[in-house]
Length: 122
Image (tube, rainbow, N blue to C red; front, side):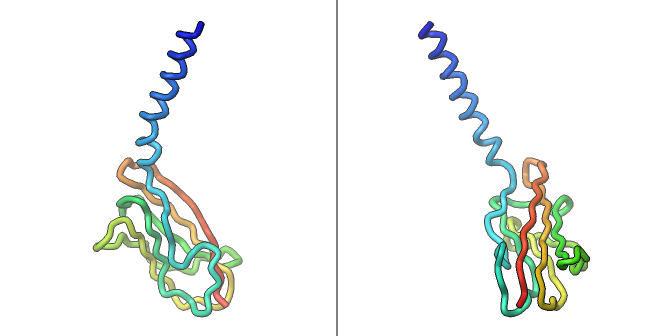
C-alpha cells in the first residue's frame, strides 16, 4: 500500500509543478496610479496600471466611473510605448468624489483578467 501512496503523492507534486508556470502566465496587476483606496488632494490626470507582463492593446481596457456609475473617462486606454506592461488612460478634470476604475487586460497567453478598485478625490 505504501508504494501506491508514494506514487500518488509524486503525481500530485509533479502536476502542481507543471501547472505553476501556467498559473503565473496570466497578466496580474502589480500596481496602479492612483493606488487602490487612495484619497487624493488633487485629481489625477490619468490612470496608469502596471502589470507583471506585456498586455495586448486590442484586448485591454480601463474605464473610470463616478459614484453614480456614470462614465467619466473618454477614449481608449493605451499601452505605454516604452513599457508595454503599463496601460494608461487619460481622465478629464475630476471633481471631489469617489471613482471606480474597472480594467480588463489580456496578456501573452490570451487569457483576459478583470478587476476594479476605487479612489477618492477630496
